[in-house]
Structures are given as structure tokens and as C-alpha cells.
Length: 344
Image 1 (cartoon, helix red, strand yellow):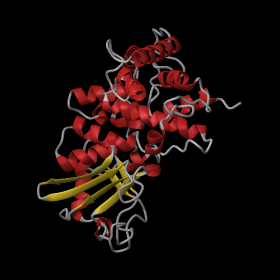
Image 2 (cartoon, one colour):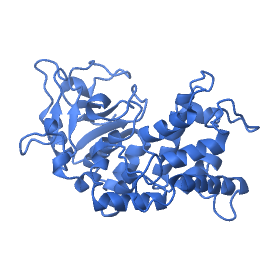
Image 3 (tube, rainbow, N blue to C red):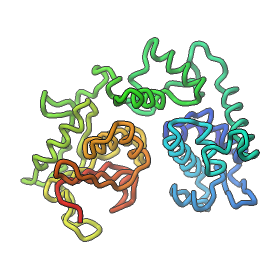
Image 4 (cartoon, rainbow, N blue to C red):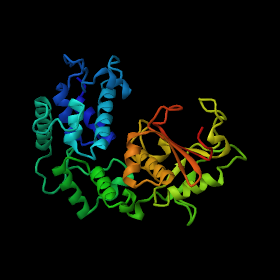
């Protein structure tokens, strides 16, 4: 019999959610049974309603239990983004569709559901005064290179302790702490941890353009290079995987920003984030949104985690950021940035 508990832990780790809480949630939903169903129409190991399954690209009829688990992990991750990392509220959304139904006076089923999951996850985590161990809420294994590098020495123990008490991961705690003081997670990272292969000389920004990203004789525009330079000024290094070497027309029949060197794609494989969105991709998109819109880091990160096709007009320039969206094609495996033309 397949080890669905192990698969659930892998899905949780892949999408940066607490493995102990996620495993307890799946146990509460189905007892790890892929054939589970409910009178309300929920199906499968994660008890997806059909509409939610479609929204997360899950086919409930193909027998791919791993896909169901990964869809559930993405759904819980998105709920956490909506609730600023509050697992009880995120679980309440998963069960009832609303973040407050686990509170006294809420739905009895949801109250019992959240209590059961958090209690089971707490038992799995145990009282680790040393802050170490396994796949539990106290683990400080990073979900991305930028988030993980802040945990070391005493900071590692502190983050681990807070994670075990709060029910979040070190990565989430780091982002929350950075947002609270108006900084970015990268400002908490030691410069020694930056990837030297993507570092540029002083004044040129922390980005590089992959070989073959541009057509011969069609480099990135000066405006796009300046945008990338300012976007990466905090130390968040990126690799442009597609520049002007792109089809001339978009799927909607317009001339692509890429064609004139005013569009870039920042792809998953070269930048270390999953093809299904999330992780470092959220941070890259947030930096692009912040630079394009002038919004705060917290607001920018929230938009990036939600995903979508965003158009901003700032300083006489139009900037489009597409991330975790199927607008114009699959934008889960890359962050698209377009510059220059006025919106129609």
C-alpha cells in the first residue's frame, strides 16, 4: 500500500506549510483514504469539493493521490496567505469556507475540526526544548534559500521554539517578522549566503540574463534593465530566462513586450522555485510588484501570494506583472514582467 502519510509530508514541505498540521488535516479529512467521500459531495484523500479541485488543477478521477495532496497543500498555503499565517483560521476556511467559524459561537463541526487537528499536530511536535526534530511544527527546514538562511545559532533555536508554539514554519515567521518592521526577508539574510553566480559588479543590480534569452541584436531595453536593477537592489538575485527571444505576438493578438526588449520571464528552474508557483517565486513577484506599484512590502507580498495579472502605472510608466495565473498562458512556472506601453 502506498505511504500516503509520507506523500503528505512531502507535499507540505514542497509548498511551505507545516507538515505536522497538514498531515493531521488530511487525517481529519479522510483518514488518508483516497476513496473517502461525503454527503456534501467532497471527494478523495483531501476531501475536495469539485469546484475547488478544478481551481487547483486537481482531477478527482485520475487516481493521482499525490496531485490531490499537492493541491490541498497549495490550498492551505493560500488560506495562510489570507490569514497572515494563522493556521486555525486557515483550517477554518478549508473546512467551512470562512476564517472565524472555529471560534466560540461558530460551527460546532469546524470548532471540533480545528481543535482535533491542532491537538494532533501538537502531539506530533511534542515539547522540544531544543527546537529540533523530524517533520513537525518545530522544524526550521527552509522552504526557500532566501527564507532559510536567517535561521542559525540562537536565531535557529528561537525560530524553532516560536514555530512549535505558533503553528507556523520558520519561513513564515521570518516573512511575518520582516513585514511587521517594513523590511523584506532578504534584509535578514547574511550576504555570505547569496549565490555568487548571480552577483553583478556594483551598480549593475543583482540580475543576469541567461544565454539565449534574447534574439541576436535585440537586447533588453534600457528601461527594462533599469527596472531589473532597482527591483534587485535589496539583494534578491534573479535570472532572466526569456527576454526578446519570444514570439512577436501574444495570445490575444497584441505585439508582445518581449519583442522590443521590454518584457522578461523569470523562470522556475533557473531561479529555484516550483513550476506550480510559490516559494521563491512569490518573493520575486513581490519585489516586481513593489517596484512597479510603490506599494509596501507587506501589500506586495500579499498580492504575489494571491497571484494574478497586475497592471500598474507609476511615474508615467506602465508595468505588468503576471504570476500564478493562466492569463496569456501558464504563468505558474515563471514570473512575467512587461514594461512601456500604455494599457488599452
